Image (cartoon, rainbow over the protein chains, first blue to last red):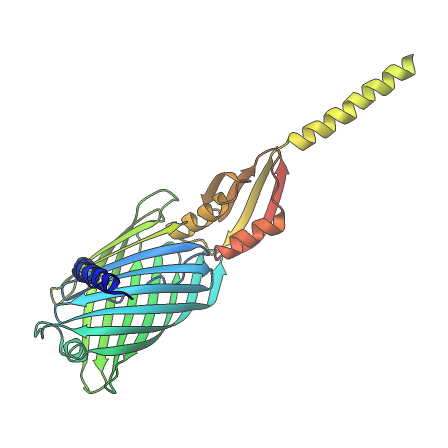
Length: 238
Length: 100
């Protein structure tokens, strides 16, 4: 690269960095609700939590594979991760659908300011700059009235630590919505998490209201500990 | 002369029948397993609409049915239709084709 090129690279880099952090600040935690979409489809998932936020975009070249990029940010750290997911099994029944996923991720974490408001496991894990490796499994089952989802993931850093997080959801829709009708769900989410260097498991239970219309979904929740959570997801085809 | 008129009349009937058969649209009705939500509906609808041989896609979650038309002059084989539904992530139970 010549001198002019280097100057332009530095100049553009300086502009790009705050923009990237602004994007991360607006959106950034553990969505991955739909790691594989239909062939040719793309899903955009945004999770905004009181402590942490995440934006993830997933594209599926086939109905079995999904590739995504997630950006996560809290007051203590930022994280970027490439994800790949495989739909290992799908059960299509007349009134019921079930899926089993496995996935892996590779990313980088950047430490920012130490924040004592975060739960201890997250804060400790996020306190070191590191390359991250992740793997996860997920199982879901749903019909038009009941929804269940179980996901477990383990993230390793370069300091011989790993961070486990589970996510278990149960939902109920009081009526079966028709094709172009708004569906309203009541949902409860339980998230246990643990850092390898600690014995304590922390838990967060969040009741949600899910509003689902056509290809867009919004979930509004407030945890029993008083922390708000908003999830937004939409699918499109191009 | 009478025989010639009969032949001519029959020929018109045969050609007319062939022409109308060629110009007929196909109505497709597919029973599909695994459709439970709006994302399923959108996925199937978008995938079918991505082919120019499909019109008026409708999904009925209660009856587990996907219906659409293939306009006159267009062609879409059953195997291609099944592949589209499978690629959307669902299972075709039965496919019916009716001339309209």
